[in-house]
Length: 470
Ligand SMILES: O=C(O)CCC(=O)C(=O)O
Ligand SMILES: [Fe+2]
Image (tube, rainbow, N blue to C red):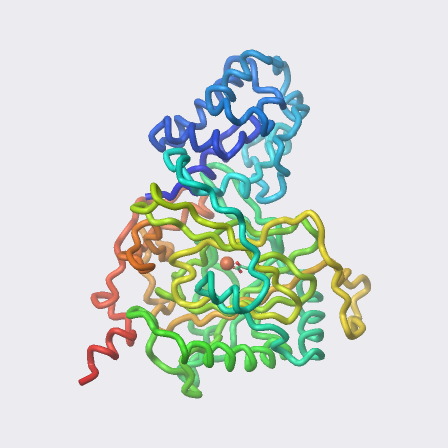
């Protein structure tokens, strides 16, 4: 059931040798028929024999030798590993190890043998069987019209009054000092995201006037119960009104999909923001790897509005090519530079068709705020190299926490689209799957169920409304 990216990540978590080039990983995975343990064993095998590939084995010029070359390189150009410390002395592979840090949680967790694994470098989709299909060069989408032409997203520039944008940036930057780096279990290791993040909820759910998400909801994050989130700070509440106006305007001009929410908010809008996830990226290396947003409380085909403040960073999108098309085409990497005070709306279908990331980048343009920092903090963060992102989201009333199926571990499941099986950009199925393993030392259960909107009583959807029309 796992997709290639997840399998590769699992393999990486089991490696005791430096992570090889993505193509080599993929070859190894394919030659082991997708068996994660067998793949890791194969790649680790040089190590098991007391020899390991030297740095040259990872260099780009050697890639053509593939998996065999990589394994054999360890045998030919042998460095004997006589102590765990030696492992660290090997030069890193040719890509920079900056994305996700994998922490060894075994008794020797402080041992220097734990490799830092650059998962970003392996989160690349094409299996080797697609090698004959030409690669597409990355495309930079530098204007709203290019974004609209190539993606299911729209970009909107200078959306807030400049003073509000700056005030919100400073508010979030100050708050970000207490935000946490997400941690979760991947197989038998803890992985940590290299950026700080937090979650905010609005005072009401935006649909029924007296429903509060703070009180009604039990919050779960990565399969772990968490404290209720903070409410939107004043500047975020102010900004949210602008965001809602733009999103609703955009949605009015777009076709709606059958499983989208068809109800309206307290003020009659189609879309309301009742929660927001916020992220802070400091410097060039902080980043978030390729992912699509979990649909558990958003439901199918969500609309997510993502506000950027501070220094410009690249928002990277890559389509997940459906299984039936992988022999005929490759995905293109789409890079969208997001400047201060811009909004990118990920419209319905973005999460089902694409993955997104904020990659590390070699350089940054420093952000020069228009207004001085009003902070009374003793050492306010340096604003010029930080980006704050706020993703405003609509948690659907028909996907309330109480309605989410629990797995055999007793933990709310997560909702995933079957991204690999799509027709005309639409997925056939969504699954509820156990997510307890993300926190519970990597141990989850095998709970897995296809979502059935009707049987689960989830409504009103666009298809309900349309089928009731005369
Ligand atoms: O920082 C961004 O623009 C992306 C954040 C993101 O992908 C998320 O919060 O899920
Ligand atoms: Fe995301």
